[in-house]
Length: 155
Image (cartoon, rainbow, N blue to C red; front, side, top):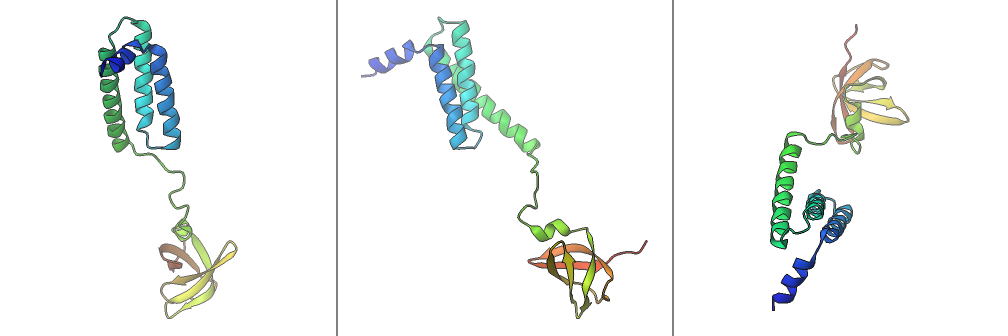
């Protein structure tokens, strides 16, 4: 029952490892998790070893594949934990958060804690201490679609 499988495994050569590696890397494209990438690279490395040492027993090839795959996955996880990726724009879908730290001129005086500013092509409601019209305020926070402001310091 296992004889055909063992015969098939023993007949695999370096091309088989490279094809497996390519298939795993292609699978990574459709299921991005950087998991199949490392398996594909491990299969490619085993293919190189099998090409250099064509007489290597298939058992050792699979053991080498397992060791390289596990080591590369563990090392990549450790590396990514210490060096997380930098996102290009962490505030992409948080439009109001992009304005924190910027200064704007009030288009409607802040009375009873509420007023308005004009940012680019949009009117924003603001909350802060009472401030007169045309005074400069600095955005310090966001609460939904409401910008939290304080009077800008005059230099």
